[in-house]
Length: 191
Length: 191
Image 1 (spheres, chains in turn red, yellow):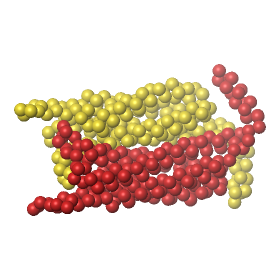
Image 2 (spheres, rainbow over the protein chains, first blue to last red):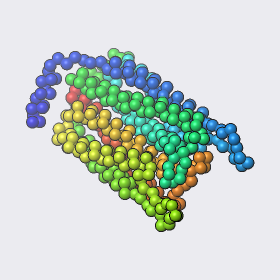
Image 3 (cartoon, each protein chain N blue to C red):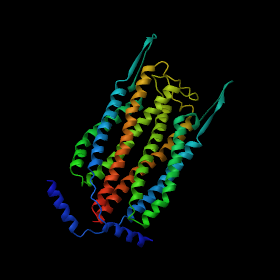
Image 4 (cartoon, chains in turn orange, green):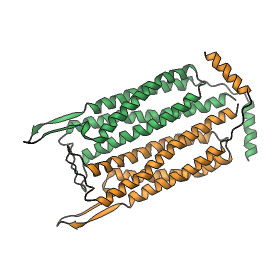
């Protein structure tokens, strides 16, 4: 069976294989990175400027909530800032890939760092999402009350800023997919 | 400049390039998948059987905590079970890769699904981690009290089960790295 497959492959390589350019993939790659910059920057800014002070206070405390009160939200802002910076830094590399579509080493490098960044961003976004869920619904067995009735604007801001981050996660998955496709096409066109 | 690079590449392809086998990479791939099965299965079982009933009760309630009370923990168990099943399903494919190291399409497929599973597992694990953090430390601005003084065993169980899951995340990153390396080696050895 193995022999048969080898033979088949031999046939394919003798047939005229058109040399396929990765230019289209590289252009989509660049566009996706720009989308990712917008998403993560928006998420970081929206969460970072998110705060609400309630219009009433007791003798002891003024009630206010800001992103810095929650470790998960702070992580969220930091992670989004890191990923946004990473996207900006990879723009030149992406442009190089458009001009020089035979690049191999840099593509593999990008796939690997993209994967690590995907894991980082997913961790930050879902940690924040779980806190947002808790703020909306609370938890009865630990007696954590939902706080979104009081801090309505804060909750809305936090929920909204998740959107940009989850958009960037989808962007990363597409980028890794495109990178793997480009690598596989290269090895075909080189036969 | 482009021309120069092309020329250089032409030279390399004429030099005798040893045909490098991907057998070693495929064996490591198989071992990593087995580690991943152990990690995610352990995490799912540890979290799924995690519950604690406090030895005292009031007139109205018996205090108890189990993983099902927290959406994030339930997500954690489901995600770990899915990823564990995925690892089991890919074992045959991994064995095929050992025997037939020229496989290309299946490698790309594995990289892509691995990436999606990495995102899924990271989301589940970090959502659970943020709840565990909250259970340990509480949050003063929303008046969520730390519950680990009461539910000590429950907290320990939840924290422990995170370990297996984060181990599997590292496994996934290594798997994607190995997959990209194997793909790139193939295209070299085919010149």
